[in-house]
Structures are given as structure tokens and as C-alpha cells.
Length: 45
Image (spheres, rainbow, N blue to C red):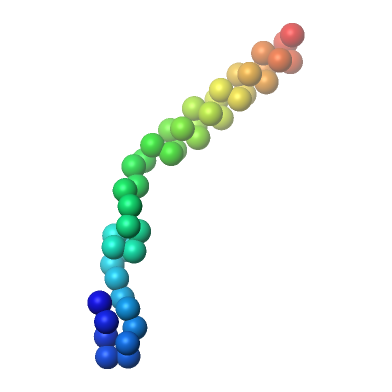
């Protein structure tokens, strides 16, 4: 981790320090579609 200059180098996975499930893109997509549908319903009423 340390080199001769005293700098710390870690890999990408170690620096991230957490799981990155690809669920966020689905949540954003579903939310976007839901908002569009809700706005369409409100405009029809």
C-alpha cells in the first residue's frame, strides 16, 4: 500500500469499500416512467 515516497495506493475495489449493485438504474428508470404516467393522468383530469 505504501511506496517509498510515503504515498498510499489502493485498488479501485478497496477504495470503493462497498457493494455496487446495478439496482439504481432500474429504480431511476421506473421512477421516471411513474412520474410521466402520473403527469399524464393529472393533465387528463
